[in-house]
Length: 281
Image (cartoon, rainbow, N blue to C red; front, side):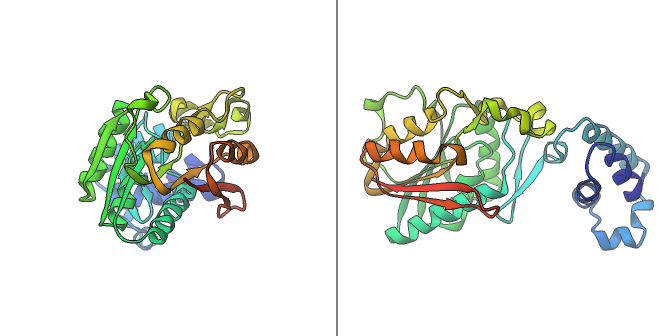
């Protein structure tokens, strides 16, 4: 199988441009060939073992399995992160959440303590720890599998992060850390169940529901729990930094205001959607 054969197979389930992009990713990551190598025909001189590997990869991709799971890696903020089924694949808009948290930290001066809630692959925690070496980062997740992957990513990128298995929806308010953090950052589940019908098949069938969806009747459940924690766990003047659902911006802003948060700001992502929010304690 060569590059042209692979992308033409993938075009059965993906648009042509996406099929070509996925095929290029496969050849670069698994075969070590960039597009210039492909143009020179090096994709036609692969070993029999590699050809068999490519056939297996194609079979998984044709079942709509995300290419990141197939290859075991995803790119985020210019770094490669391990991912596997059961752990949310990092998204480009979450890179902007990291930038927002870093902006909040710069405004607060040197030295910083950060809590990442719902760390998943650890992409946020690792990025913040790597980009700001003078920070102390703690990361929570309810999933044991996610924490194992996040720990691998922290080791891969040479950063120290304090990982804990915590369910933010059940943590006792009185048992939470007291004035321990300058920033709490989170990309919690926020997609409404009613939005499923507009989502891609590869997301619905392969990525973990627990990291994506919230009940239609209680869409702010994670934000409410995190903001409640923040009333005691954040230092005076500390910040919440959230990735958010554009459908819930008004309700979330009003909720934070009633909880005495101030300087509530909403930011658009690269696609022009209201996707980020910051608030001060």
